[in-house]
Image (tube, rainbow, N blue to C red; front, side, top):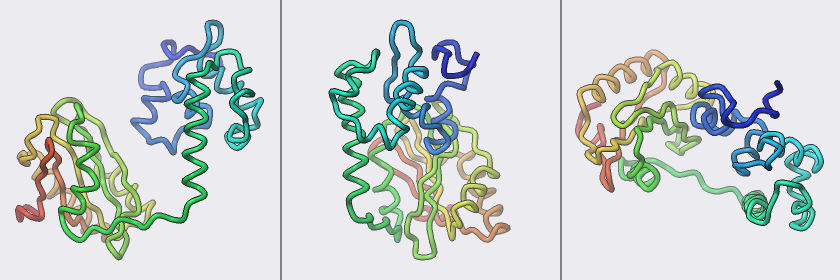
Length: 229
């Protein structure tokens, strides 16, 4: 059976659009996957993946979807007012972003700068997220990338994935970060051991690791500030 004709509950474990977004990032998903996540549900006789495919097919893809009126979208069976409002809101957000000037990249000159970018989103995460801030030669943030999402107290981090992302983005340096769901940002022995291994790997790759930020509940720890690098 074609994937877009499967109900979400029929998809293999780890293969739903949401699960693949968590694992690989939104950039790895198809247009149908992205709309499927936005719509969440289909109709009684049509899976949400099939509904997404139908809407994109009749509208002419994402660009065509952006040109549809509220009343036109309501004509799709399975798209009620709430879903159409969601689509229109996302389209308008995208339109405003694209029409605005380029945002100035954040510059990381001290641990507080990195923590300020991260704490609001990760302070109260129930699972451990491990990620990297990819910096250019001026310490401007080029990209933020989540590498792994773990259980309540652990995440699986593969050095090859970290440096693959760094190389793909032509990183000059990296800042590691992860959150402690317990709320206590004190580095564990495993945190220290992993960081030192990654620093050694970075030296071989010519990519410096400037810091490792651990985020607790409205607080943080910096390896650089603690002289742990």
